[in-house]
Length: 360
Image (tube, rainbow, N blue to C red; front, side, top):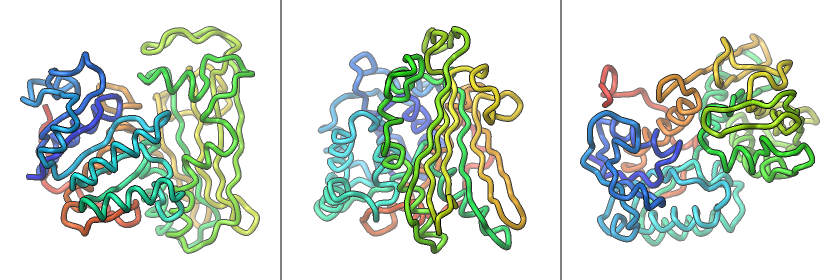
C-alpha cells in the first residue's frame, strides 16, 4: 500500500480524501489542515463520509513529512498564494514524496512554465527524489486528455472547444467567487482572475499542451471577456446574498491561435444564478454544471460530461473527477522515475479493482 497524505480539506481536499480511501493501492496516512478548528477531527468526518477513518487531522507539517509518506495530494489553494503553494509542494518533493496537485497553474504544461516555477521543482526532485504531476480542477481532463482522445475519433479536425458551464450558487468558496472572480461586486470592480493576461496564465499551459499533442504551433494566445449584471437580487445556499446590478455572470475564452484562427479554445461560462445571462449556454436539464468538448470537423463531435458528488452538488462532482485523475496517477508515479510530469506523460487507465467497490 502506498502511504498517502492529503494536504488541505476544502472543496478539493474533501474529494481527495474520498478518492484516496477508494483506491485499492493507496492508504490514507495523514491529513494536513490549516484551520485550528479542524485539528483533531477525523478525516472521514471532514470528507463527509460515514463512520471514522482513524486518521485525525493535524497541522504539524514537519512531523507528517518526517514520517516518510510515499505520496502527497496537495489540495490547498494556490489561487491567491502561489508562492506559498510552490514552497509547500517543493518541501514535500524534497521529503521524497510523489506529489499531485491542481494548485500550480503554470505547471500544467511545465515545458512552457516560467523558470521561477519550474526550477525550484526540478531542484527539489534532484535533492529528494520525489515527483510532481499538476492537473486542473477546471477540470484538467476536460482541457487536455478528453478533447485529445475525442479528436482522434474523426477524420478531420477544424477546431477544438473545451467549455465549462457552471452555476456558482452551489459552490462553497466565497473568497474566490466574490473577490477573485467578482461575483456580487459592482460592474466597475476589476476582479483579479479576469484581468488581462491572467486567464492565459491559468489556462494557457493547457492550450500549449493540447497544441503539442496535436503537432501544431500556436501563433498567439488571445482572450475575450463578457460580464453581465444581475437583474434581481438573489440568495445562495452557501454564500449569502448577491445584489441586483452587481456582477452575476462571466463568459471568457482563452484562444489558441493557429494560422490566424482560434483553433483550440478553452471557454468558461459561470453564473451566480441561472436567471443571469439566460441567452448564454447553460448546463443540460437545468443542472448546476457541465463540461463540454466540441470537435468541429468531420464528423462534428460533441461530448457533455456531468458529475455529481456530495448529494446533487455538481461542483463537488467536478472536483471529485479532477481529483480522481490526480489520485489515480499516484501508483503509476510511484513506479516511475523521479521527475516533473504532465497530463501527456501520465497515462489514463481503467479503474482496476474499483468496480463495485463501496465507499463509506
